[in-house]
Length: 617
Image (tube, rainbow, N blue to C red):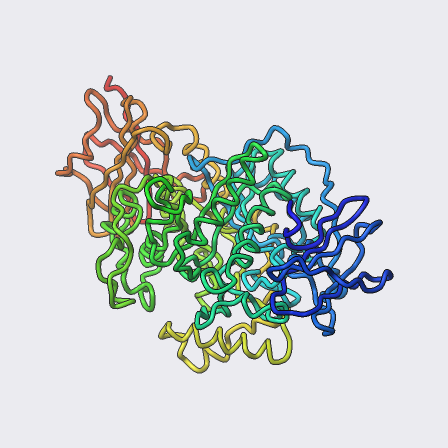
């Protein structure tokens, strides 16, 4: 690390403190119990001080031009009882993951969780106790919602103000390292959800420099970082070093970049590409490969285009299109941003064939062309989901699909998600049909709490039913402790709802076992509409024994006598036979009806079946 690496870099002999505060005359370092130290100006706005014999855990802060004590913007740890004190932290965790080589982008299964609500206790140590559950389920990547420090007693984490310091209520930095180490021991990677598009309530950035923020560029959530204006280079370094820090110091396997459409940068080297390079370089230095996923509302193909072809070099983009179409198919509602979708079988077929539904044609929601043309995007470059934090909370009362849709329909659509050629992502508790809500919570007080509640109310009014004044009165208050507590998983439900867990587990095992579902190689899928609410997906393979046919029906019982669709034809000298059904009694289904594709048969309502090709006797 250089003398311009931000924060406090600790060694047993001495600790190097570095701050960037351009146009400030004097910066003083205050160390609790040791007094004040005037920092040396290095030029270009940097100030530094080296102090010997600092003990790990010592509390410190900075005074800018004689002002009040401020936390270090690059603090590695914040004091649990006073968030104005930063803490010197040793990076000497006893890792056991020396054989871990990181993640590639093929055949992964992602699980999004929020540390504060994943368990009743809401800590890293408590989350470790649930890793065996995720291993048994078939998860290969845990996506942790943001854990950088933010203001308040609870929150989703996207309003980060100190991006280097893990949020203290979840545990110490070494507790986070222990979680990652334990996940690696079980063959599970961990990626961190980061929000570099804005800074949350309660930040101190302007006290250090106004150059941290871009003039005239404000996101819907707050001020945007300055990535391309005057004095942007140190700001870019602050962010890219943060990406490298998580990979290097916490052995994280990558990042999920939040709302990248709000990362404004008109320079020749887009900050998204720079963040990705920094994370990959940190991983490469440790002999580990890194996985970078992004949320991008326009679904811009440049993010997942290789660097050599003019892109930013990320691994994958999340597909809102699949979620929105599937949500409409499951619930029947398509207002606000769902109005561009009908939930029709053709949409779902196209989503599985092409990844994204909107690739430059007009969107009614935005009243302009939406998306970028990318018919040839590989399946491993797209992440599909049925639930995530945003989409659940946007139902206002935090209803999950287990509340909004019939159990048989949830089972049927889960099969489509988990056997689709794209990478699937689950949200915490989805695998056992958790019925507790996941709400928007933000543990603030006073004017901050009122401002957040009013902003949340305004944003939800785009859904027509939420304009109802009585509904507005019933919206859960983000600042209320009850809102946070209700969002915590009840793990007793996992035992009560074991059949749905078995369905997820069996489908993910099938996905890993059967070559037809692998994202490697040249295998392809095709699909067709076979009824008003029914579809089929054909999985081709080099060996006919590996071919599969998935059939999904969300309408009335579909009577199949003849089907003038060539994708329904089995491989030569073979016959389709039942391989799996969402209505298996093991999953609390109604039972598997007799199925003979050489005769008349019925595909029941709200059912997915998977067929394999057997040699005809």
